[in-house]
Amino acid sequence: MASTQARMTARARARAAQQKVLVDRKRRDDANMTSLTAFFTAAEHIDAAQLAMARALDDIRGREGTLTAAATLAGITTGEARKLLALLNDDTDSNSQPATTVAHDGDDTDGEKT
Figure 1: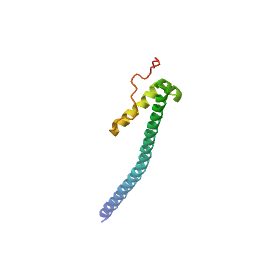
Figure 2: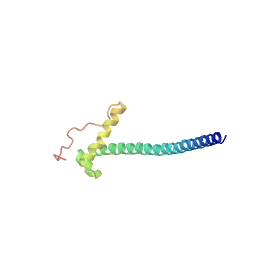
Figure 3: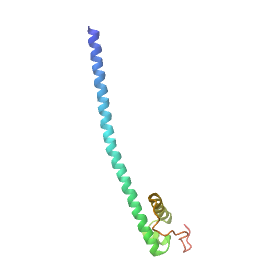
Figure 4: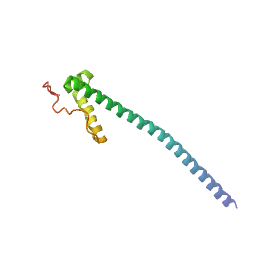
């Protein structure tokens, strides 16, 4: 009789421990989902901001005539400017719409190399 009671008590403790594990995992999963949602929302904001920066830089380049001049006005390197403008090409490719900006092949016409 005592061994039966001990087994039942051990099983009850094991069930309680398993329930605690499940509750702790659910709490961590819920907290992780909240954090991941915040993370991906921030990433979307970054992407949108970079796209806005790229459009503004493209507008400046159109007025100034060269990418180097646009980058100088924006206070970034020409390499950074090229990376931003590449986002415009990626954006128009992903939207499957014709590009609204004019492609500027060899746009560093002032002879500067970067």
